[in-house]
Image (cartoon, rainbow, N blue to C red; front, top):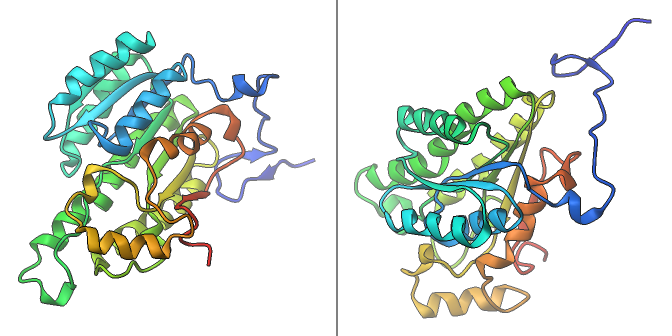
Length: 278
């Protein structure tokens, strides 16, 4: 009988079943895995890096303008008993991203998990009121192009080794239009990430997984510029009536990074206190 051909053209069907641990907690373990997280010197990225290390992974932290990441990496390594190293890289520079990913692969001897988390907010208000295109370009370059570069060069490694999990930090802003702030640029970038990840999930189905997490309003430095009166309007629109903490996100990242999610690809997990539910 002729072999069935996978819809993506990546090989014959059926695909092999993964060998999974019997105990559920072992499914969530990252022991023996290497994880890399962009934009992880603070905020969501740092909490994810710390959680992955607690779960047993060796971790590469990425930073650009925050050298405190070096000391944080040393702290994680000491507290969690894993290898943890900080790498300086501007995710807007394709060559830098390529070199950094290759260096991580060499330093750690592999790369199992990549979180494309680096991002910046739109702070300029209504798009048509902004002079020039620099603000638009800056957000798109970090939030979308940076994720693309990260995915491209990580994917090459995943394909070579035959496995890997890519996780994008998207946003509920890719699903809804935020109010009262005007941020069309940021929303467009995050919506782009959602479909980019779904597309990669199909392209990479024979060797790796691609998923997204869409946080709602989270208490991190990225929203420090927002006045209290604006946040009060947010709280009224969030069914749970508050912003989340970065620690309330790490379980979703751990699921997608671990063997608990070996049949999950092209998915998005919304963690937003119910904002998108109504």
